[in-house]
Length: 337
Image (cartoon, rainbow, N blue to C red; front, side, top):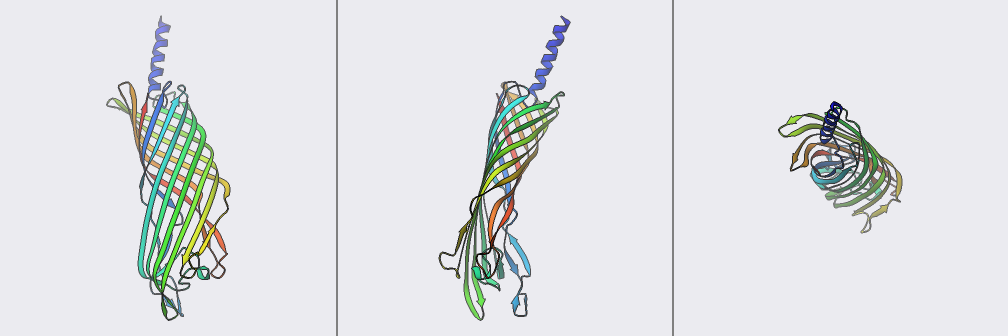
């Protein structure tokens, strides 16, 4: 009789621990998140505002390089998880973020920092212009994850550590428009300046993913449980990048410089990490968890910007790669049945 009572008591304590662990027995969990992320690329400068720095008949930049600063933009993430038992679970999620950023600079002594240099197209070639430079950037990010996770450490109820493996898919599109208008001096003649640039990169990739998920239960608060949450994951994507470039000025005619790259296949690493606080409670036998924190996402060299090199030969071009960084706060709502 004592053995039976001891067994039932141990079973009750075990099930109570599982109720506050990452996974519940045969549990379906639905998740929705509000994201407020800031997307950032490495190469975002577009113009120099200079002083009238002349020496020996030439003009040299003496001033500030201006950047098209990105802003925080809203996005969302939805997901579902099914716990097979107290140790294993299958989960899937989808993330979307769209963002638009614009900036402009006006002044009497401007130098464009993007576009085709010199005799390739850009005007003025070796002097400043007076006018306005504008940069517009459109950004789209889609990602999907499918993972199998296993709870490996839950001997003590306050701590829960799980490892997961699966697949990560990402689709990124960045489109940039740049315009500089005004007047420049060609010798002793004042001439109009009109430069228009469009640069676009499409990136997508899929590959294996590995990560860890950690929860530490601080204390009971009211009728719920307050916990520290941390999640980190990394993936290697088999990725494809395709870039286009178009530049039309007063020197090129209506067609201008119009080129695109062949598709490039390569391996791209990515990292995702987040840290937050969660509060879990029950409503009508349904487990509800509210979580908030900060998240960081990084993709290596996913943006390809075609750039002209030589001031005399228009065909000299290279690819200027940039990393993509996403970071910002998130707010999550999870419901378990």
